[in-house]
Amino acid sequence: SPWITPEHIQLPLTFPYTQDEAELELAWKIAAEQVAPHLSHGQDVGFICEGDISFYSTFTYLAQTLQQLYPHAKVETIPGVCSPMSAAAALGLPLTVRSQRLVILPALYSMDDLETALNTAEVVVLMKMSSVYEQIWAVLQRYGLLKTSYVVEWATHPHQKIYRDLSDRPHLPLSYFSIMVIQ
Image (cartoon, rainbow, N blue to C red; front, side):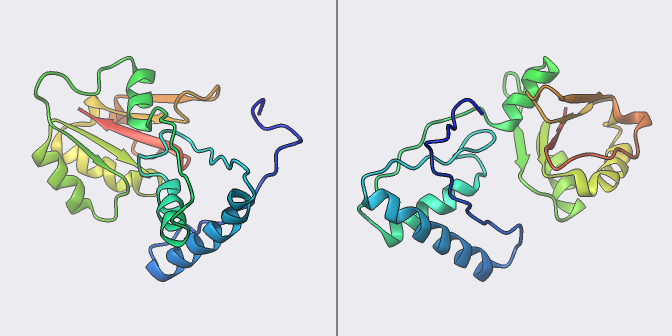
């Protein structure tokens, strides 16, 4: 990356992908303890992420833990473009118009949650959905929404892929960086 040069120090922070609250809190504490000495020595520390740093970002937990453990630490956030907006732009579609209701599900652990969202809003965005894509496809088929459902994989990256009209795509080998827009 042109923004990270050899004179920059890279801190390898570990954030486990788990639902175990104790494990997560420990990881956030360890990360905050790794960052704090640099701040106390007057150094700036940057946390680079995909998308917007305040939209379902791991940074949120690090910042909160850092401020809890080190109240004098100054945390400044610089906004980015969150993935639902990037996906809509890649598709060339508005995410919502007029008074359409929008539901964004950051992860899908139950198809009941998807059905509730589909019954509540005109537009539904699913993040972190690659591992349950086939189940989602079956629900969308029942609802008759496959033609107006889209998947954007690696939005805004050079190797971005777009799948429109999922009717004939019951199996897609998607990466973690996939997002679905259902209209």
